[in-house]
Image 1 (cartoon, one colour):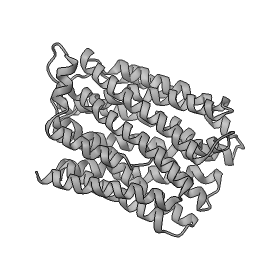
Image 2 (tube, rainbow, N blue to C red):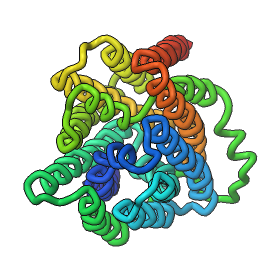
Image 3 (cartoon, rainbow, N blue to C red):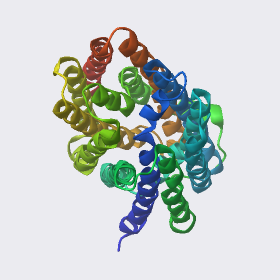
Image 4 (cartoon, rainbow, N blue to C red):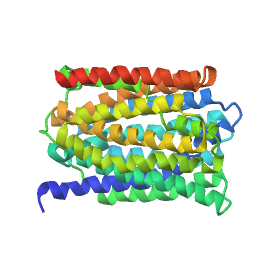
Length: 388
């Protein structure tokens, strides 16, 4: 067994952590939009605001945790704390009775995600060579999204066949989350790439935010200003006639296509270039916005749009993360991921908030035009960037 093959086991174990965490998370998140709409004061605009606030805070914390993991040259402690907070928080949705309660719990869950994500991605990068990085992130996404398929299906199964309530599902999410924590504690190995030495925050940040990395992150941020999350795909399915008990199945469709495409997208990016595959992923999102605006509403259309959206997520979430380490020194990967997530998260807050407001006040066509226009500009910018 080569050193690279041995350390690739770390990627598998981190993937299993994400698998069990996503079983826990997605059985909750697949029904959360409808749960929030049913609370006093719940609306599409409120849902967009909650998602925007929670995700923006999460992405800002990724910047902090990424930088701190470089400074202390420790990844695993941040990963343990982050997963721990999230897996403890989610079951408390069962006790929520107001939109404010839901906001606090959702934010707490995203705080955990913010703490763990950049150090985890840096640890994945440190565990493999550049030649296998796309494959590594593809494998991680596949295991992660397999959990995201099982989670919604479990939620539907216990509600339809066992008569459990939504709040019962929230409590059940604690079990797979606990398994994920055990794998981190006893299975994940600490690996730090690059040379040791004194970490200087400002110098490290300046070394990261310059040159081609800066230009790349600008195009990624532009795209993210219009890239809404899965909650709006689920709301679209509801408006197209899918019953609430089957909404988790729509979410499972998103995650099935996400899972199927992740490893092929990662391997293709290793072969032909990660930037080119990222452009293709942005193109799939653009197609999704066109379908939302133009396809007549029906249950079949809802599932089809969910499938296309999943392909976009599988490509972009795999390739964007695999792309980052190639633009920075190996000792600054945590910082680079932190900057990446800060930019994406800030844009994500704007996107989800504006899409929610546009959808509620002007209709689906308006939010689709907004998101599609920004995706088009980002695609053109990246195509120029590749040719430089």
